[in-house]
Image (cartoon, rainbow, N blue to C red; front, side, top):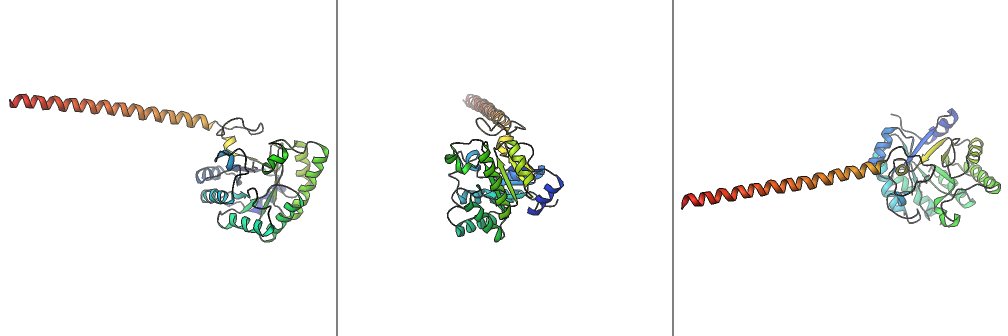
Length: 284
Ligand code: KIV
């Protein structure tokens, strides 16, 4: 079982082999997804929404990400582990970005980090991280850390100006040295154009079938998320229903066994009581 390394992904693109990516946030899920053969496990800051119950990813901190990345790296033996850099951990200065990315690698055990956005500041940061030996995955289109600026979790790149900007951002990110780019919620034709214009692989989520790989939030594809899931997130099973019915069966077992145990105990006490009164009568 050869572990997936950063350079393998470009080779996969060249060979036309699709890259399968899923998110994980804990040891058990990482172990299972790794066993299934996923190529990349993304410790996404979506952890804030699907595991920690926040409304968006903004409250997620670096310490939370390190905590979850550590658990995932204990579970995955083959998949490449990429950790998201959360909001405000890579925007406030180069030194801080380098230190924070370094902690995700050194303490968390990730092999690479992902940063959202494509402005000149982000490109420069990606470039500096790559310079010090930290592989970087880019993320364009719907970038959830900009949810307020975008006015919600809305599809992006729909008019020609936005599409051109995204193509340019992808090109500049590639030149800065990123090893892959996530394209989230953009039109399929635009994703196909970006994909064919780059040497590094694109990983799509709600960006059509032409990307070099696909990523989904594991809780969405496993049917574990509460409420509506994004329309592009195919659900391969309904684990939440299975969990609820298993928990109900357990609760019934406990209640039944408690009442059975209670009845048995009552019977034993009654038997002990009548034996004692028989004994007392015999003595008299
Ligand atoms: O945080 C995350 O899970 C992500 C994916 C949706 C790409 O960034």
